[in-house]
Amino acid sequence: GTSRKMSFGFNGKMNGVEGKTPFLIGVSGGTASGKSTVCKRIMEKLGQVDKDHTERQVVCISQDSFYRDLTPAEKLKAEKGQYNFDHPDAFNNDLILQTLRDILAGRKCEIPAYDYRTNSLIKDKVTTIYPADVVLFEGILVFYFPNIRDLFHMKLFVDTDSDTRLARRVPRDINERGRDLDYVLNQYMNFVKPAFEEFCLPTKKFADVIIPRGADNTVAIDLIVHHIWDILHTKNGDSASGQHPYIEHRRTS
Ligand code: CTP
Image 1: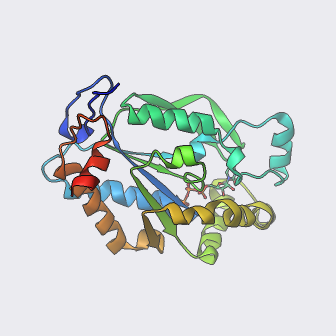
Image 2: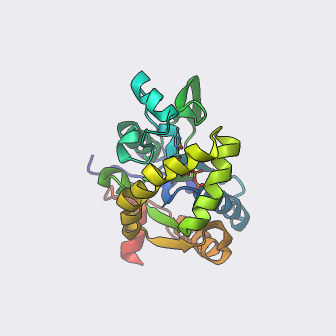
């Protein structure tokens, strides 16, 4: 469509063939770097800073919801700590792409639910994601595939020391994910660490903002939130060219 118009949802406009286009933010970083907490802080602060719009809809989605279901053979491997959950192919990347495209088109979509204790999708359980103004998508490999990476309007990388991350991951996996110490450390040395170095760390260069120390970095999070707020309010988002309003905002400012 040559004259299709789009608008950010924050204006409450629905002009064009599909729904409102949210501001889509990708948040990556190694395991236990604090991605979820950074997302939570952004969500909280965006609500606070946004005095003239109390009904700002911000949602956060995790890449972990898109783990592939395992075959019986893979399941056995996973139980023995011999399955690589940190490889890009461990995720249903087609579904990630489709979901993010639906979100950008303002369509409501359904997200699978995942259980780390059984390494499997929870049968008959989905979460419905309704069109929002800002959508955060967080995960270890959200910047890996170019076709997924290119969909984000803003890319953040949470940069936390690997020893800090390991110190957080061990108790989390034991307490919340039903693993024992041996399992966690073996999985970390055999898969998590090498895959981080091979697949996740090289995507840091695609980030717009790198956040040292993660969620403790309140200055960085405040700056990011104010920038998001500016983008959402400076331009009303109409674009006769059919280009994304954020791109136009960048071009004209
Ligand atoms: N993983 C696992 N078992 C599964 C599925 C995933 O151990 N059945 C692990 C993978 O090894 C991967 C990690 O889950 O390293 C991904 O989740 P992580 O990024 O650690 O969790 P988040 O809560 O998304 O991130 P953060 O702690 O940074 O908030």
